Length: 479
Image 1 (cartoon, helix red, strand yellow):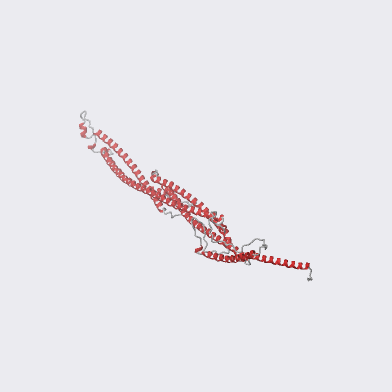
Image 2: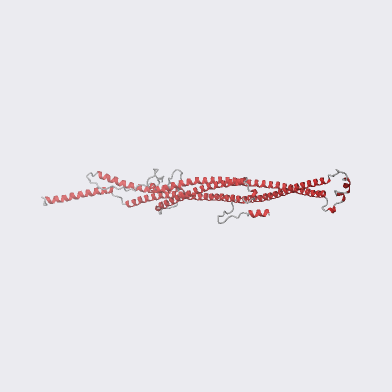
């Protein structure tokens, strides 16, 4: 006989069933928690995952920075090469300006020639042609120099953009080693901007991945055990919350950093290579290619202008030398003719003196007291002969005619002597002018040969060049 009431018993049984239900529900919660709850190493796994992502991005960014630095070094080298080409071009342009000054000096020196020698000759035409040629060469070199300066500005702009990109990309690589072994350096290819990671980083990544796989296998075993326990309890109520992966995701740090926007670049590589960095490298590569072609054009232009300038300079020197030789030859002919003129003048003077003596003999003594009896026209023999009519003698007429002929001949001789004197003076003046022209042309040739090496200072307008005082020299030669 039961003493307790049925109600009391049912209350206790209900409490037992409720406790058993709670126990079952707790056991199911434990099983579900083992399947879905994070492991205690989740904190370390999250830290490792974040560090893996961070270091992957750092390494990819470092690869991009190294590529940018290589591009910056190439740009700097190209700027140095282009600056050297610019200096060479400026030197060639200075030589052309010196040649123009030398041409002007040669023209100024030849302008000091005497008026008889100032007729336009082949040497003057060669000097004028040389000046026109040098002006054309100077303009072409100035155009090349302007192009080089514009290209230097473009390279400087590209260098500034590369520097800004390097500074912007380097902000996340402070905690990363900046030195890389030869095996980890970028393999530069002309058709791709991909960067390969080093073998050391691949080894480290493999270790990290192996650790992650170990944690993942452990979590999978727990999950499988929980699943088996849950199959036996179909009435269990599962916990409603999102499942979380316990294994850290594998981030491939060996992904290459490809060209931006060309596909095949994902993850950290795509984040590392920004459009600005890609544009900076592409702009630098294009500017370097353009600069190299400009440097080739500058070298060809300098060689071409040097050959043409030397040919023109040699042509003018040869023309001046030929003119000098012709002037010397003509001066020698003039000196020979001047000697013959002097000889003819002396011969005419001697003949004139003989004519004067012969005329004196014909005219007889000046004073009548010096006339002898045999020279008189009224000597006794003539008076006896003239006692007959029609016995006039032609002696006096012959003497008058002879003296008149001598007077005419002497006048002609005097005129010839005056003409010979005038011709001799003209020849002497011409010889003096030829000698002056020879000295002036010799000065011009020596000046051109002395300054042909361009080892002299090109002074400005404030310091005019001291040319030889040709007028003083001409006056000294003519006096």
